[in-house]
Length: 315
Image (cartoon, rainbow, N blue to C red; front, side, top):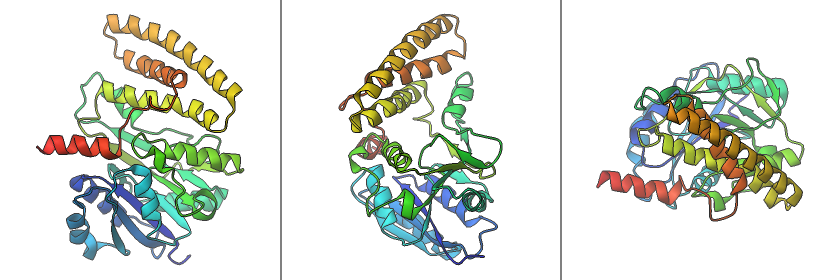
């Protein structure tokens, strides 16, 4: 058994109940005795509202539980700041709305050792308990993450949440996440695109189960389609950052075709109130994102926008 070599990082923004649930799922991990070097909570709320949660749970933590206040709202900034609180060579990320199964971390570590990958991703089961019944299956797929049935190397990358990364290769420098994506997200897409260009490898840990719970304000079709649009922007924006304009043109052409074909199909299904219209609207939105990828058109879901929404809710 190795010594403490993995840190678990949890960025959080004014979700005390969800943070406690996520932390308790980390405390319940099995098969990793002596491996966890630290659990770092990066509190991205200027008011520091996560501090009481961390303080209350510190005594029950199986590893050093580190609280770090990051008052400038932004998902990339929070992740970079959390990285600065640990020197562990392996870094696991868990979002504050996620719940790890007891064998999650052990399965990630086993998959990394087996494959030698730079990044290992977990399957995610989406949960949308407040969604409308007809919409819930789509939303639970949307907030979930599906992959191969067996553990091994994969070609595609996913989001940063519920993943394990080799710090030396996947997280270079003191601020590997691009803070310009603080409000819109997509900082993990840029990170993984750069890693792929350097010859990095990705893997899937089929047994590393995680649940992700969509809060009520996100368990809506409008929110999911805005996110789908932003996801669709990813390939075009990545090509634009590389100044690969032929690739940008190809992605825009693909997006135009997707938006037209799936948009028309969605219109037909909407007229007959078919639940399948949500999936087709999603694909049309992703097509539009590829077409309208330009700076300034990115929807904002994180950082200041999320903080404003939470303050309005509290008021």
